[in-house]
Image (cartoon, rainbow, N blue to C red; front, top):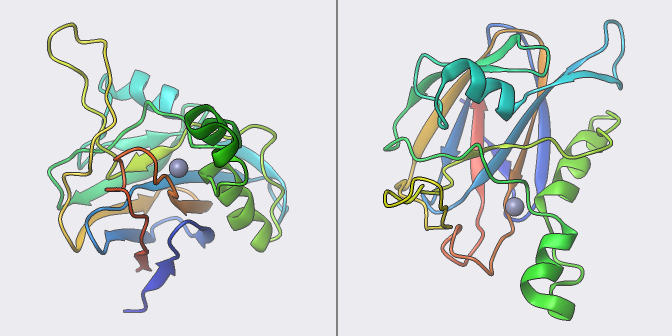
Length: 205
Ligand SMILES: [Zn+2]
């Protein structure tokens, strides 16, 4: 099976046909992969019609993290992807915005200027396919991202290292023709990528 690299700190996108499955592999176990999906307007190769929506997905599933068997919904409340397999312990995130230029300035001031970020990586991935990026960055499905909700008050969040191990993976089956985009998150200030962003991989079958 052909594996495609999601290069450390970069973005990549790929078309996925209805019925195809994409296997997202956390090759080193330590890397968060921001994940988006878009449908295109009928007969268009460049214009987006819908986007995968974490807020609509949470409302339908009544949980914050999807499990195998759960579908993931777009902003029209239609299923786009279904999580069919997850060999991790199930720690992913749907709450945290993609990192962006402003986030690195917030975290590191002047030193954060010019830092690679997932919002720009989404644009990088889509434009490489000739697709016009959305005006605003949709909230991503943050695969392998470990954001526990504190048990004491059930409202506080923290940014932790992934719990996944080398080679663990998630499989997503397309329910419709769509474009899936990934960013190997370049966050190296917080612990979420264990301080060292690395490559991950995907396979389509
Ligand atoms: Zn990021």
